[in-house]
Length: 300
Image (cartoon, rainbow, N blue to C red):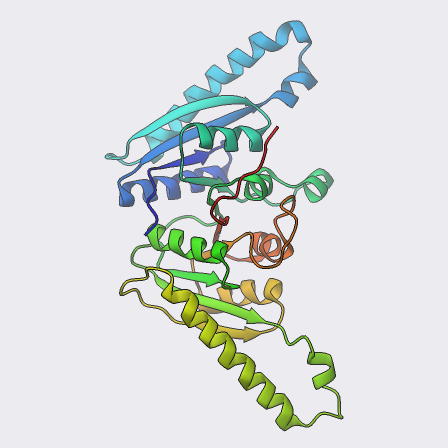
């Protein structure tokens, strides 16, 4: 099982960040691990509003005010028994979050999901998106108020190492949850097989063969992960992963989706990948994204 020495919670003092803090605090209490709280004062805001001669003074003033506010929120939301530390950094938010996580040797970054509110968010992405894309650590994107520990986890898989790491991390974060592995396959010859010239029997035979192969691959993949006596319900669906993952998450009423962000697709490391990117915005629950072992971005 994956060991989590501590958690980094990134807060921008929004309502969503309060939900993320509640979840991070709940995890820290349940797993008996340390919680690091971070707020980032954006350098770009200082550059925009203050002349160079005032920037250093204002940076110090804003950082002190943010630290006081972060400590007040921590005292309100973090239950007794959780060890925590508050800190404030300046710079680009996503970059400061990732670099701080590395510096404090965090094993999980927790951020709030924020919707796209501007054209800039649409084309450049929110802080949560940037952290998920660039972080070499697992990232938990919190969307909902935590009412209880995670009880049911959907684990989409392409049978890759990244998907295995995501499931292993989810097993740690949700020690009592049911696990629902999901593989979505595409019939590459679907358009041809659906033509009138191919008999229905041939289509059914092809589907059956595909499901048999997928079922065998899933069994092999699960054998490589220490699931113990966990309740596991496997799912195999045909279609487009980006569309089916949110749909299945809703059907099963899961409260966490755990995904590997670098699988067999060979997508550029600059991008998160279309499936996980779509899931980030479309799944109705919290989302855990995990990289393959050894992955690391060179950050500026």
